[in-house]
Length: 268
Image (cartoon, rainbow, N blue to C red; front, side, top):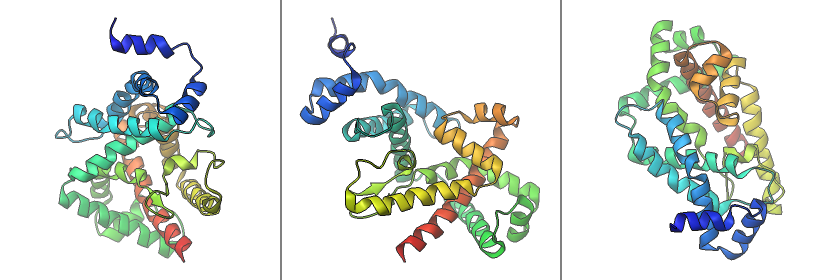
């Protein structure tokens, strides 16, 4: 019998919450190995979703490798007392780990990154000036391009913009951080001195999502919270997958602007 099967047979009939509690206390390597084996399919699942929007030079196997670090991180940091399932927690950590590594290798061409920044700044400037979520015609006019050129630009940068939603908000020292997963986690186990500030950040993120145009909001919720693929979201919204990608890109650019403004306001 292989060591892998021995580990599975040893723990598969035990209550998982009790196993998590035991692991937090003992750091038993066998329990850790059991969780790695049980939840490793999540890594390929998340990598597969991300791979859909990536350029050809980004290899699926590399995404899986990056995601594996996220799974290990999730196992070490998961708290069974918090009101969230491990699967939900782990998938966010896996996704974040993949995007962190993609940022590190700087896979997005510089010219495309510059165009994405220009587009983001145009949206932020317009919405600050007009006080509402702007439409494509207003954005195109602000940038001095046609609506068709704007749609092509959204399509080109769709792979780059997805990374930003996984950015982490730091609220204190380097070991004290809040990520987007904290918008759906219970705050019960947070340190008392950080609860107020982290609750403010949670509110900021939720409010920013609420302010998105309806279709963009649905894309964000379905992709990050319901964990649907872009193709599945297209079927729900009755639009093409490329249109979902555009909506996702616009939503991310709007969110980045809103979150940065709100984050700066919190610091004052």
